Amino acid sequence: MNYFTEDFLDFFKDLSRNNTREWFHENKKRYEQSVKNPFLNFLEDLFEEIKRHDKEFKVEARDCIARINRDIRFSKDKTPYNLHCTAFAGRGGKKNKEIPGIFLRFGPSETGIMGGCYMPNKDQLLAIRRTISRDIPKFRKLIGAKKFQSQFGTIIGEEHKRIPPEFKAVYSKEPLIAKKQFYYMAQREPELILSKDLLGEVMGYWHAARPVNDYLLKAIQ
Figure 1: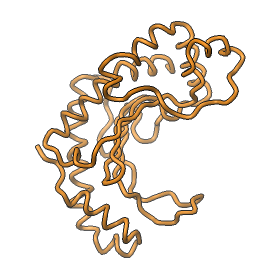
Figure 2 (figure 1 turned 90 degrees about the horizontal axis):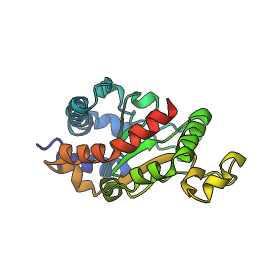
Figure 3 (figure 1 turned 30 degrees about the vertical axis):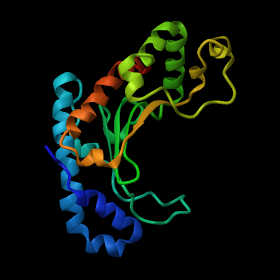
Figure 4 (figure 1 turned 180 degrees about the vertical axis):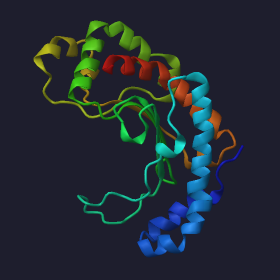
């Protein structure tokens, strides 16, 4: 089924040219009809589908949607609104991006589906690195799986320039251990949002990410 109309994309295109509180409030009804409500409806169906496969997934869709308002406190860009919708479909919801899940960003210029640990804390990062170092072939098998590579490619994220002494020997065998973020991303065309196969497509990414997500989750726990 189609969750979104062309006006979902058009709203953000118009907002990019009129990113003010005045314009947004004048178009708030349009935002609710074409953006906010369809996005929530899609997520509710997506979450029901995820719950069929993951019994520990108990968060609600409305608790996983990020606000459209930008945090401009420390930004030179003072435009008040994001030009996309975002949600984090993970067991921790939007308030806990340490727990692996699927992160969605729907917009006319930024349409992405991401997975993994985006913001592991110091202890979680150490646990991930130790888990990898204990069995590098297992880690390689997971990220080398055909489905994972076809959907996401490989692990991305920022790296530490200095490798902790504990992992210097491991680094020569597995350079990804230098990562301080362990996430992966697929960038898609905006037209995907308008597709009647959107739910199935996103679930395809969820299934492709799950083995690596489960591996990272087990490591940090």
